[in-house]
Image (cartoon, rainbow, N blue to C red):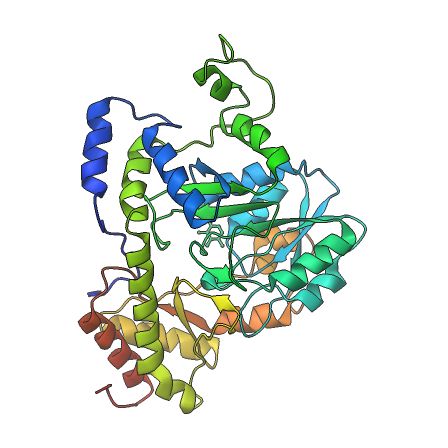
Length: 382
Ligand SMILES: *Cc1c(COP(=O)(O)O)cnc(C)c1O
């Protein structure tokens, strides 16, 4: 029986109080008071960025594809080692993802492979900050500006993380964050679009609100709101925003806790790396990580299968991701084949994630570490 699940999202502060208050207010739609308070928090965390709360990171990525006016025939360079939403947002506009291999140390977009993948149809680069460790944004930014390409950061896992002293989510023309229950802070389902280009702010607000000028109506600037542009329903209910606010108010504490757990894993599992049995994650010195997730790179897919079974017998749930998008049925239909992205294929087959969340206790983490070391016949940590 699983005693230590892979993930849990639990209240860390005033979530219940805020949700109770919003229910009593009778105003639970999108764009409400709690959404505005969340946006203000995020704006501060992201050093003044314009932030629009959305129903998911998926929604924010779809908004980005609409704002860039991607069209059939366009290509967007992105990793294959990512969640489906990064690629779906592009495909929904009829454009095609151009899958690029990753660096073995960060599992992020490899700038050299990126440079080679860019062609006459490339319109944009969508890097993904895997595990809350930033991509090499200087290198990617140089490639993008030399070719006049837009950068959209999939920062779903990266809230609170930085690259060379600047917060992730501030490098692209647009960036998307996630408040899904698996992320550092969240509200079950939720997200945010960061609009770093001021010329896109007004249109982003219209897109989020079904293609209407409802925002202007609410400000009393028009007497009836009308259909003015493309759009969809990308807003977050204020019930969800109230929960999210409780989490954001404790953001520093949650971040510190996750980093402490990450460090504890690194300390306890160090012997595995020393013995050459597994590789642990190490962020380059110029990245400020946010402790989003902890993974091990094992010797092979076969070892991983036995490892996950062993942990399950010890009551610990371990999982892996991502099935490389270029080898999925959708990726194959786009013409990709095994061998196209060797680093992605190798690492994705051997990576396993360990439980890491705010409510994970030291005793539980110790139990996980003991189960992991036990699989390799190593003694329990002191
Ligand atoms: C979680 C995640 C998403 C999707 O986030 P949702 O809020 O669930 O839509 C997209 N990209 C990456 C890299 C993610 O980790």
